[in-house]
Length: 302
Image 1: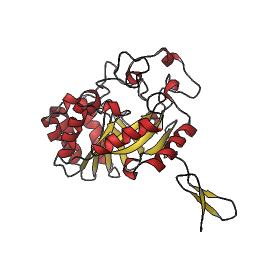
Image 2: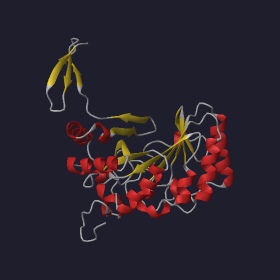
Image 3: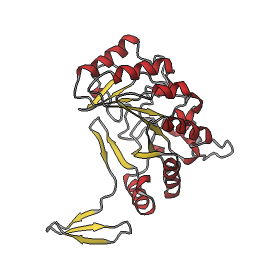
């Protein structure tokens, strides 16, 4: 953070603002609808083939736009041993589950002594093919990415992916790059997800620099999230039209490796869908027009 800049894009993500006291119409405490899809504590089973497992709700630092801001950082943030065992048993009993996503809270806040057995238990479930870890730790506390922690991610039958939450190129400090290099060099692929935030990254130059910085560090941009409807986050939220305009600009200006998928979590728990611009248009009479990155339209057969 630059303490001399009141509009600093890093500071804006973590420093409280009186604007958070303003609740807009449509905002809600559980904006993406975790609760209706939580059969037991610690599990969100929204999609048939994957579940979210939240072993705790602690983070090294707390993002002011977080869609779980009503839960993270509370006094009783971790599952008990019995609750965690029950969550793992739920996954074991549901053989349609192919992917387990560790989230929360930040899973890499767990010590290697706790994270290792958790990943080992999930890896032992025959129908689990992928273990995905969502984290901000390489940005907010890169010193936690130690050789012993990285060792817990390696050499499993299930593929382990690490998904980094990063919203601005300045978050990719040298310490962060070193932490990510340690993960990737261990054979663990990394993806990145970004939240589109007003006055933080809502312009082509800032997003381009971020995506290129990620790719240069062997991290594939995955999602660009439209900011969720959490209470008190309206000052961060762009319009969908603004987000689509940014995606159009990126499409014509950057390598495909640098292109995230612009997505929206439908409020109420109805799932995540792409909301990027559409390049295929139909005139209602069976004629297709395809729009190129420069905005020109071209006929294309049905």
